[in-house]
Amino acid sequence: MITIIIFISLSLFIVFISARNLKKIHSHGFFRFLSWECIAWLFANNYRYWFTDPFSIPQFFSWFFLIVAVYMVLAGVVTMKKKGRAEKKARDEEHLFSFEATTALVSEGIFRYIRHPLYASLLFLNWGVFLKHFEIHLLVTAIASTIFLYITARYDEKECEEYFGEEYRLYRKRTRLFIPWIV
Image (cartoon, rainbow, N blue to C red; front, side, top):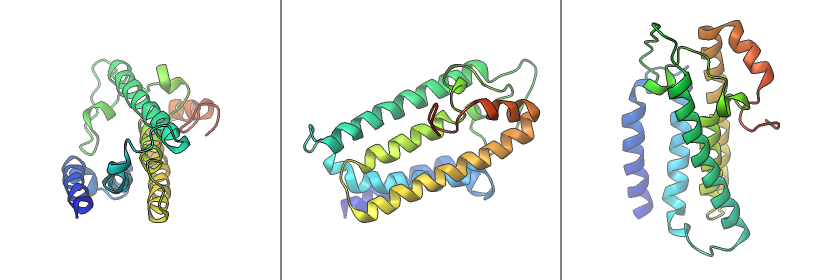
């Protein structure tokens, strides 16, 4: 019962912050919402195993992934806020969070290596939470979340290409999607 209560509580929060994205099904925010829901379900099921058997291999990888997730989201948001605004230029797209509405292409810091550090952080969060406790239905949920994040990134790339044009296409050629030098 507590699992359902935690999931519903997290879902209410996720729906609240994603409301504007839910109206636009063909946007990156819609698929990000679905991924967040998967991660909420993983957390609701695995919260009780957070500190169980702390020196096991799965826990080690779980904590490593969670730390990487925190680093990536912080590095991504800070860089977007610092470098994502061109002077005297506005971008008013209501489905974007304020830090997402960049008017200058961000290609410094962590963005020098990967195009989507915030989605990568969700990817690492997803697998970090999953590794707290293995169950088949949770594996399916973690895979679904990964697929939703991939779709999120692809929709975001279409939006960025429409906004930034050739500059984004060139940027795309020299960076990776989620993980430097790999994917």
